[in-house]
Image (cartoon, rainbow, N blue to C red; front, side, top):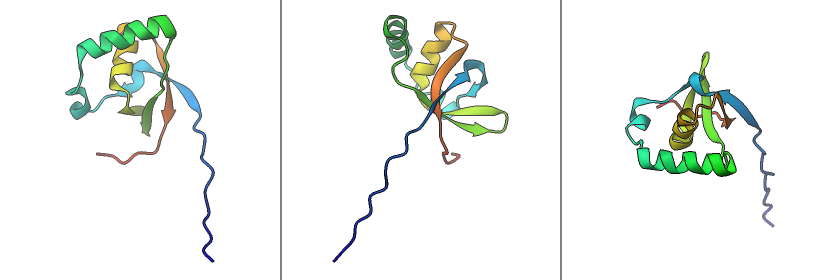
Length: 92
């Protein structure tokens, strides 16, 4: 008889991060689409931020892992903070 163990999913907790304290790696910045930023900014104005970004801690700052267009939309709207998840991610 084979026993299968399923781990229960861990719920990540959202946090608010200072927009100015998030570093965007150069390679990630190269994928920026201004039209997509504008669309997300309009959506954020209407419905608020729907999907948290993902960041990893790197000393005193945070490095963006996922959510470039959401972060740039928040910047365009003049937001001081953004909702996200703190994740453990491999440095590239």
